[in-house]
Image (cartoon, rainbow, N blue to C red):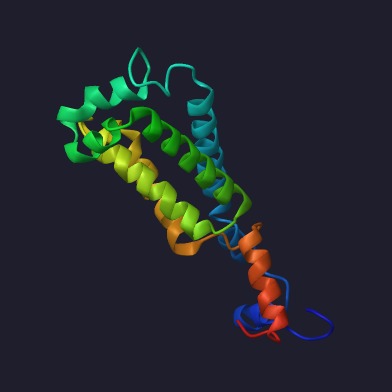
Length: 177
C-alpha cells in the first residue's frame, strides 16, 4: 500500500500489497539469466580487446584465421566472407558489440534492444562458427541465442534503469501506464 491507497500492481494481484513468494519469484525469474548473459558478454568483449592475438588478420588465435577455418563449414559462408573483408574491423565490431550488450543487459538499459543485439550476435556465431558442431548441442551459440529470447520478449522488469524510467513515467502521468 502507498499512502493508504492500493497501487495498480496490488489491485491486479489482490494481495493487499504483500506479494506471495510465487509473485516475488516470478518477478525476479529473469534476473539470474540477465546477470549471467550480461557478465558473459561483457567478459567476452573485454577478452577480445585484451587478447594480443585475436584482433589480427592472421596468426594463431586471430579472428582472421578463425573465420577462414570455419568458412566452408558454416551455414552462411557469405557472412564469413563479409567478416574476412576486414577481420580486424570485424573483431573490434564484435568486441564492442559484446561490451554494449553486456553493459546494457547488466544495467537494464534498453534491455530489449541489448538482448536483441545479443541474440543477433549469437545467431551469427551459430550460423558461422558453431554450425558444424555435431551433434548440434555441442555448439553453445544456439543455447545463447535461445537464452536471449526471454529478455528480448520481457526486458528487465526489476532492478534495472528501464524499470526505474517506466515507474517515473507512470508517476508523471498520474499512475497510468
